[in-house]
Image (cartoon, rainbow, N blue to C red; front, side, top):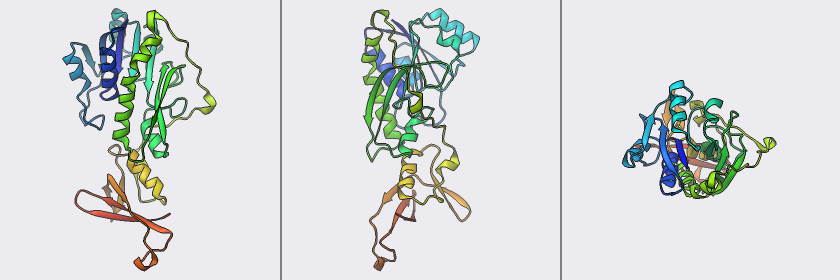
Length: 281
C-alpha cells in the first residue's frame, strides 16, 4: 500500500516511524513545514532529517492545494494519505485523490476538542483524560467518520510539552492497528460523529495567557501548564509585562503569618527572581 504522510515534526515523527516499521506500506513522500523556532517544544529531530536518514522524499513548505502539488500527488498514485498534526485545510480535489481516502490523527477524543490546539485546551480545562482519534478527513474540520480512538491519561504534572510527547508516542503505537483496518485495500466505514457533543477551541492568543486578572489558583495553574512556551504566560508589573513559565503551589498560611485561612498563594518563579501572587481559594 502506497502512503503519503502530511506531518509536522513531533507527532509526524512518531507516525512516520510507525509506518517505516510496517511491511504493509511504502512511504512515497512526506510533506511538512520548516520551523525557525523550537518545535514541537520538546527534544526531537526535524522530520525532514528523519526522511533523509530513510531515503524518503520530503517536501517543505508546499501549498498542498496548488496545481503543481496536486499534479505531483496524482502522479504518485497513493492508496492512502495520512495527516498528523498538519496545518493546512485540504481541498476536495486533494481529498478525492487517494482511493482509500485521507485519514487524520487528531490529538483529542473527537467530537470533543476540535480545532488546532486541543492539547492546550484540555490542560486549560483541567481534563484528566484525552487521547488520539483517527478519522477520515473531510471538507468540514475534524468532523469525518471515526475509525479508531485511544484514551490517554493526563497527569497533574503534565504540561504542554509533556502532553504533546505522550500524544506523539501513542500515535506511533497505534499505527499498526490503523493499517490493519485498511488491509487488502479495505476501506472501513467508520462511525459518524455526534455533532451534539462537539466542541471547538481556536488558537490561543497572547492575551489569553495574561495572569493578573485571574482570581482562581486552579485557573492560574492550568494556564501555566497549557500556555507555555506558546504563547507564554505573563503578568503586568509596573506597566511592564513579565513572562513567567513556572509555578509552585505553597501551603495555606495561618493568620499569624499575615493571611487568613481562606488565602493561599502561588510563587511564580522567573529565571533570576520570584514573584508571589496572592489569590483567594
